[in-house]
Amino acid sequence: MEGHQSFFIRVKHIARALGAVLFPLFCLGCGQEGRLVCETCLLTLESRPVFLCPVCHRHGVRGQCCSLCASQSFLSSVCALFPYDEKDLGSAILRFAKYHSAQSLFSVFEPMIHHFSAHNAWFLSEIDCLMPVPLHAKRLRERGFNQSVSLATILSFSTRIPLVLGLKRTRNTPHQALLSRAKRKENIREAFCVVEPALVSGKNIIVIDDIYTTGSTMQECAKVLKKTGAREVRGFTIARG
Picture 1 (cartoon, rainbow, N blue to C red):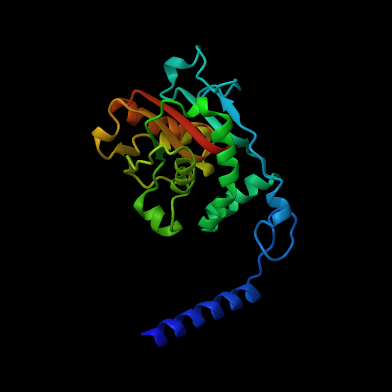
Picture 2 (picture 1 turned 30 degrees about the vertical axis):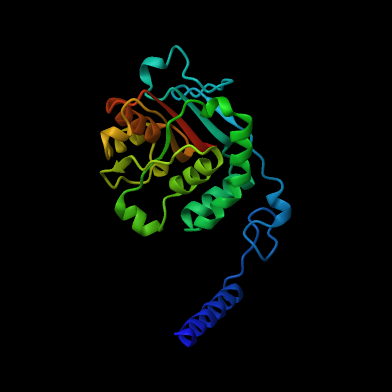
């Protein structure tokens, strides 16, 4: 048995070394060979929270839904760690991790999330649980992981707020990024359901996703949660698209 284990360990190391030669890694920030994010570039990442109204997206101190939009939103407030910018390192990391199945790369956001939770405790106050936006089972098999769960796990560890997989995706919808604002809302309509009402009823919940663009996905999740009895639903994402 030990001989077999030793053999497989050697094969694993050989495969890893061969992969490094055939497919070398280059830093997403500076292009230096060796890692996807080098130590120097890693130090440049910082939390620049964006608080915005969930509907009109007007920036505000606490990201609360403004009075004019309150009747149109199931979300009470939304916050993102930083604004999305194609040229920004944080955005490049988010994009690469999501579309290249690099789940471990999400760990670079951990210091930023810890910093956010330490300096914005008010946004996390009176929250009963964190709920990541779910992927459809087919999409989950294709990607191999749910990026929203990865991010929610980090935030849960930082805040000690329980992570609850209380939402389920009922339809395998096309990628939102490929659609217009109007079509995004229609695409995601009735695409979610609550797994168990007892997980939601009377709870204050933060829905977690990777990026907030039009807000259609998060609003649809919040709608289902509110209709199932949630008291309040806030939104938290890594980037504001």
